[in-house]
Amino acid sequence: MTRYATEAARLLPWTGAEGQPCYLIGDGGGYVSRVADNVESVQLDMADDLLGHVEEMLGDRSATPEQLRYVVTRLSESLREVHRIARSRGARLAVAAVRADHPE
Image 1: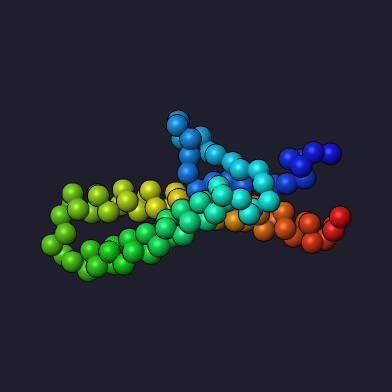
Image 2: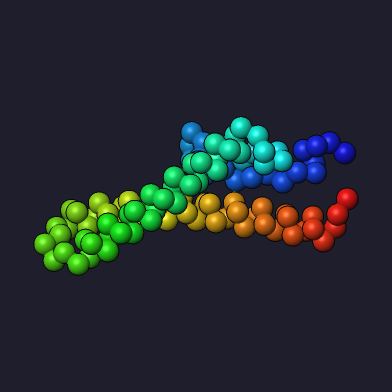
């Protein structure tokens, strides 16, 4: 059995040229895995900052429709990124649980 058949594919926190998902096969300790971890961390921090900004805007009755449309667009992008991170981490947790139940 090859190494690739025994390791789970990780959904990466970015997409390919035409928006298709990108995957990494490996043990999670390589360079691309570390880059992906860093990108996920930045994306989650940005989502947190965006939520704070949205809360401020919702309390500001002078926010224009254009400003609200802009922030909703950014929220959509951020939610898409956070959802991808959650799917990736959930899949890796499921694989880890199976491996824990069936050690080699």
